[in-house]
Structures are given as structure tokens and as C-alpha cells.
Image 1 (tube, rainbow, N blue to C red):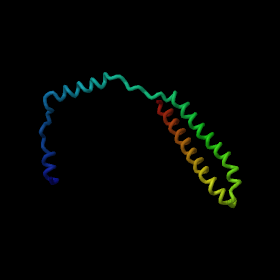
Image 2: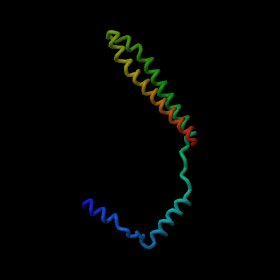
Image 3: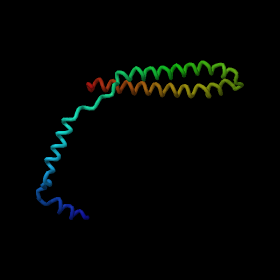
Image 4: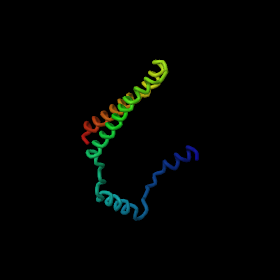
Length: 117
């Protein structure tokens, strides 16, 4: 279809008339939606302590893993630089990921508080 044909079709002043029963069926559907009960909100106040406990367990597990791996690092016959790079880098990256998650969560909570919901 060319642009001229589209301009011709769109340029006509024919009044659009909905089919019979369309308006009443659409309004019935709108009334049904308005009368429907609100969805049940997620219980965030009950879920947040669980999230905190899970985060604490993961943090505690990481600390215990680091504490238990210390003697294993000492028994390795690697030069200190290799042991440092091998075992400190992943823990450093995990710290950055945890920090990013904490900042994201804090900014989300702040935005919710500012928005008033």
C-alpha cells in the first residue's frame, strides 16, 4: 500500500460506528472488573525476616568456609602469591556482589518509602 492510498483512506471523514452490542458488552466487562475484589497482596512483612535469616546463613557459611579453608591453604606447597590470588579473589568478588545487592535493596526500599507505598 502506498503512502497516497493510506492518506486517502485516513483522510476520509466517515464516522466510525461500533457494532451493535459492543458498547454494552464493553461496559459490562468494565463493571465486572470494577466489582472484582482486589488481589491479595504478598506478605512482605512476614517474608523479610526469612530473607534476612537466609542471608545470615549464607554469610555465616561463607565465614565458616573461609575459617576452615585456612589450614588447607597453609598445607599447600604453593608460593604465598598463588595462594593469595587463588583464594582471595573469589571472596573479594563475593563481597562486591553482596555490597551491590545491599545497595540495590536499600535504594528499592528508599524509593518505596518516598513513593508512599
